[in-house]
Each structure stands twice: as structure tokens, then as C-alpha cells.
Amino acid sequence: MASPAKRPAAPAASALPGEPASATLGATIRRARQQHHRTLQQVARAADLSVSSLSQIERNLLTPSVGTLKRIADALNIPAGKLMFSTDTRSTRATVAVLRKGQRKSLAFPQSSIRYELLTPDLRRRSSLLWLVAAPGAESGAPLTHEGEDVVVVLKGRLSIEVGGAWHELDAGDSIYFSSELPHRWCNRDRREAEAIWSSSPPSF
Image 1 (cartoon, one colour):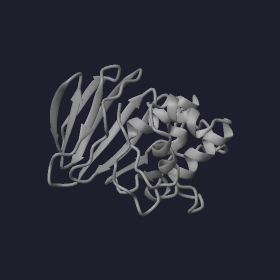
Image 2 (tube, one colour; image 1 turned 45 degrees about the vertical axis):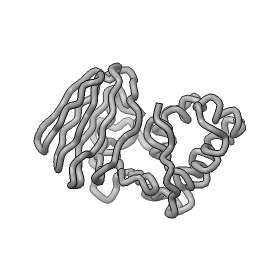
Image 3 (cartoon, one colour; image 1 turned 90 degrees about the vertical axis):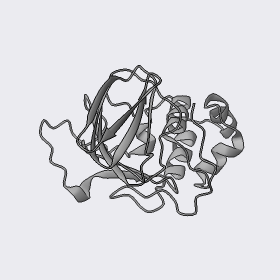
């Protein structure tokens, strides 16, 4: 499984639209842990992390990978999306929803060169659609598995995606479909920033 990045992060994770600046990724994790009445030791053990690492993640001093976030969420028995993207209780299951560019929920990992934007109103749909922006050298972490299927379309640059142990190089305009039950991960080995649309059904977060 993925482990947290080892570089210290000076700036905190960006707050989501409509949320106060204090609503950072680390604060969200700490709040979720406290709401579930779990200690640092309990969550760290279940997520295969050291207590020190989890404490630093909660204080935005250590950058978690997507895999690490999913393990923390699993330890709390909640979807990882609740840590990555806020759940708007006012959101409805409307059959038509238009999201303007400035209205999308987004998450930028501190010092990780990765940004995700949610293109669906929330994660309570049959599928999720994410806009991924990855700087050169950015990567998702160790391979992940989950139920369903994924589709990735590269819009800009080049993205390397590993599925079931095989790497696939995707240039702008290329796409890939795969069963998400196969171990998969991605990285940007190119010198250019990469952008992609990532669809998961059901939502993997």
C-alpha cells in the first residue's frame, strides 16, 4: 500500500469552495476520526501507519497519497470521498446538474503536485468524474483495487497508467478502460503537466 510522502508541507491543503480556510485535509481527517471516537493509535494501526505519521498528516505536515487516504478512510469505515471532498447535505439527487468551472469541489494535496476537481455534484451518484491535474513527477502511490470499472481520458500531456502489472503510456486524446478490481495506479513521467478525466463507476472515493 501507499505510504505518505516524506516531504514536509508548508502550505495546508486548499479549502473547498464555500468552506472556511481552516477546513484543510488534515483537519478533515482529524474531525472524522474524533467524530468516530477513534484514537490516533487505533486509526494508525488499522491504516498500517505509524502514530507519528498520522499525527503529521492531521497537522498538514505530511502529505498523504491517495492510497494512504483510502486506508485511513477504511479504518474509519467511511468513503474516502468524505475526506477528499465535503459532503453537502443540501445536495439533491437532481437528474440534471450544471457545474460551472468556479463551482467545482477541489482538493490540492500539500506539496504533492496533484489536484483533483469533482465534475459531478457529489459522490452520491452511480459514477464519479474527476478532473486530474498532475505536475511532472507526480504519482498516485501504490496500486489500488476497488469494485467497478474505470475510464481515463488524457486531455493534456502524457500519463502512465499501470493496470494489473502492465504499464500503458497515454498521450493527449488517448483513453483506457479497465476493471478497477485489477491493481492500478498512475504517474506523470513526462516533463509537462498532465491533465485527465477519470471516471469511476461506482465512485471509488
